[in-house]
Image 1 (cartoon, rainbow, N blue to C red):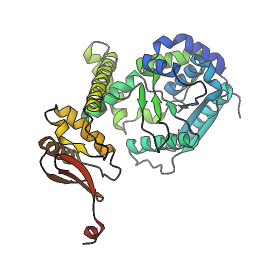
Image 2 (cartoon, one colour; image 1 turned 90 degrees about the vertical axis):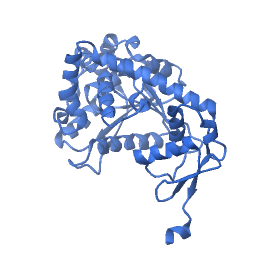
Image 3 (cartoon, one colour; image 1 turned 180 degrees about the vertical axis):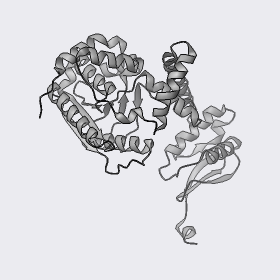
Image 4 (cartoon, rainbow, N blue to C red; image 1 turned 180 degrees about the horizontal axis):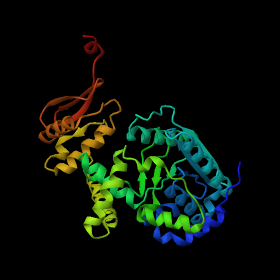
Length: 351
């Protein structure tokens, strides 16, 4: 492997001096400091400034974790030789830091595939590799600019408070299988702007790879990043990115309050039914959240359209007998003020 022109260990120390621990998101830092010493951590490394900065800061700020740190690099195979060069760059940086690198690539890569497809492929790779290695923690380089971009993207499709509270600094996921621990996505850079991360990496003497596709408007996020967000910042006349980050924090607080309210009501019984009577008279936001939770617990429920969800929500609020299709496997049935999932009988499928 060609020797890197960068002294990566010295660069990590320099980057950590420029972005000390108290500049990182406090929820992420507090969570990390409480984790078991033997726990292994993975970091998503694309080769861009954000992910390189994250790798350097993790290596420098948590020195006792270095021996249990692993990097994941996913090649979308959409930029030919540039993508291959990204992988080589990540391999050199990781080798100098003594961090093992696990690489994967997108077999279904095509220029016509959507931004959502590319993201899903990347996170499927992360999930598979973490499961294979029995790892639970993935660190991601999302920063403050990403908050504004994500919020604008989700506003365009009508997301509620839970969706607008993304990306979270500490995001727990339910277990992939019974008896396993849940996964965590950790984002310590949400309190730092992209320009600040790039400046710190540059001043440290490190390098990064620029993704040429980020300068094109093929994807919605890129159009927002290149055209909308800069004008929005100028029009606001203030720190709009910081304002969006504060709004995200407040929305996450509200989201947690809703979850706590549903926990107190305990609307889902041991048999998996959702009690309309327990939800009677509660604000629609609470009923909505309980219904979301119930649907996530029904593995055979198909994708509900927004209209289908709203129709089921109204039926649940009324508590009257009702029957709504949940795809080819069954129905959501309200009977005796309880919502249950009933599978389609085989004999009925044959007719």
